[in-house]
Image 1: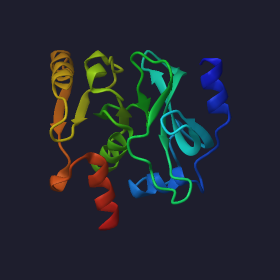
Image 2: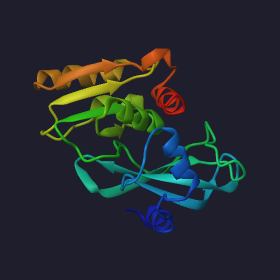
Image 3: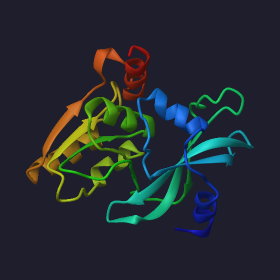
Length: 199
């Protein structure tokens, strides 16, 4: 972990009672929260050039999961507490990093974006990992214990690298399923939020 990433991570706190906890509750996530997630009350946003409350997600490489390479940051409106769409950023440098929300079992759900991965994990009842970038999905090297993978893709999203990953995994005997959000939702995060709203 670089000194800059360490400084930002060490300045963060747990999620309980924060805007990040509300954000996760809207996706159907209840405590205990993933150890990969923390809350920072005043994280700097370069796009808006101001400090905002934010959720930090630890970005790690699957080959060295204990080493945090960078932080994926989701920002919140300081007045309403709502997520600021389109303002997320990556703090630090990571070539093939992912956000692992749950410990790997024999099955895992993969999705590109943080909220989609969380939402898909909740709806499918599987451990979730966010790949952060569709173009890097085909480079993933999953733990050998994983024998079933669900690729949670959004309608109209990039498919080529996901298809390449699926072909590679299937050649190694891993079962791969491609799943789109239920009920015609535009993405997995929206589907999860609708499930929470509808009870």
